[in-house]
Length: 429
Image 1 (cartoon, rainbow, N blue to C red):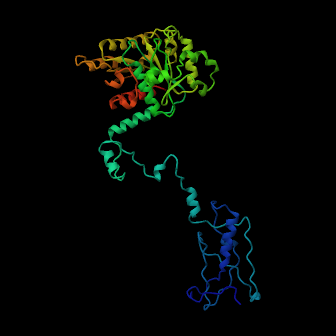
Image 2: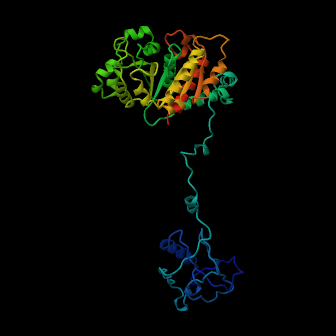
Image 3: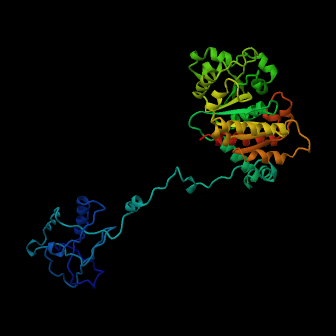
């Protein structure tokens, strides 16, 4: 019986060598088992193949060679092993397993697995937009907000220019900080909005920052920082612990919980009250303030210090030594503008040039000056000698000298405090 049964449908292949179907499949399997999948291999030389079998009869054409998927055979097909005449009807001998020296065939194209391994892996973390479209922020107020609410969010035109500016201020205020920073708020004249600015900016920082800020009343003249933040009645009902009590027990404070016993809280704004006793209110020294500042720096990343009036009292050298930037309070009155300029000149001439150059001048229209005062001229007079000048409009919530809360302030006043808070955090480098 012949070793290979020819296909009756292939009459044109008569006379060609009879090829066994399994020889190339076995050779391919052996090559894959002995060679790496990506290593180049060579074509099986014809000289190493067994001798060609005798030609088959014309009526029995040879069956075409079956190809192995994913492979190609260059050049003419090598003949299969011939069946000796004396062994007709017996099992044909199995081809010898290829040795390690026998070269294999070359793949004409990479497999699907090769293409996947070579393709770059998309970055799901830094490029989420490759898979999900960026969602527009929700508009608040105005025509855009009304359209969004009316359509249930189906039509989202995104925030308008004013809202985008507000959002940018919020991002600047909430910037993550590495370390602890201190801003001193001072002036040479009282009654021009220094303490109200400290409270308003402190409440704004507390609203937008993830970490709570701290405000310290270092005013030697019986400062009222806590009363302006809490209200006079609430402060009197609470435990009236002051900065003097904190200094007396500072060595025993080793945690935020222990420190909280000497602090007051206006929402997320934490405050240290100034000394109310006139006999000891001016006794805070520079060394004592630096001890308090060192303690605060262990638990708060942002601190505001209400310095009171003047720059020559006992604690002022310690405050300026530890300050990262300054807020100079001024007013639209001619005397207030002159004193603000004098403060900046004094700082520059006493070794604090960087603080003066990077200072933020805040002009508060506390007394609602008349139209005779040229506000633009005053602003121009001060803007050239500081990093930034910000005007706070007249607001009864500030001018009355009582409790300062963001809810009752005008939108323009709240925006001014946001601009001050953003400028303060921008100066923390």
